[in-house]
Length: 281
Image (cartoon, rainbow, N blue to C red; front, side, top):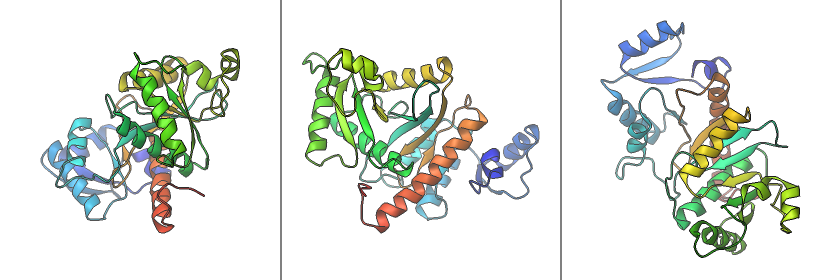
């Protein structure tokens, strides 16, 4: 938070127990002179207050601090007082992988545990919106499974085929979808060629849509810890973007995640102003 503020990306508003915030700031050698603090007794109250400020139009994004993700998201998804929209919320990692030719978007690796076909529709559309906000107008979306063949015993492959047909019929807009694709032929042209896959997406994917949270979580962490990838992440589909920082995240990741939030705020306002919900040019 402090690093993103020093870069001029955000204006922090801190919510929590004021005494604990000041103690943590002293330990981290961070001056809080220019930061507004709203003191509440505990973490549940902090989550509720943060959501209230969004509903009142006083903040443009949320960033998780030391409270548990479940505490924050429980307030966000509350039926009566939360931040739900007509879209399913989903998490997207944006990863700079040294061995890949451009940034990779991976979704959903943090929020939806076992997404249904309808959930995956929203997961795809949210990621496409983010790609547009990053300056990529026609992202290539690979729907991942363990094989590139549709197999009745593997539900992920059937969902992938259905999502591609939905995109053909305009139910998912703004990107090119293909699937099922195994990871190798989604990101490697040679692998796709060997398997005789003819596709505009195979070997050229911008977005990887995983079948479940375990697959996405392992993929993202493998890239980060074994392939030296830099990662930023954000939750989309709520009234405002939500940055779910981890205690293991480094400063670069936190700053990049804040930058993502800014881009999504601007992108969403543009889509609403132009009455272009799909973000199409």
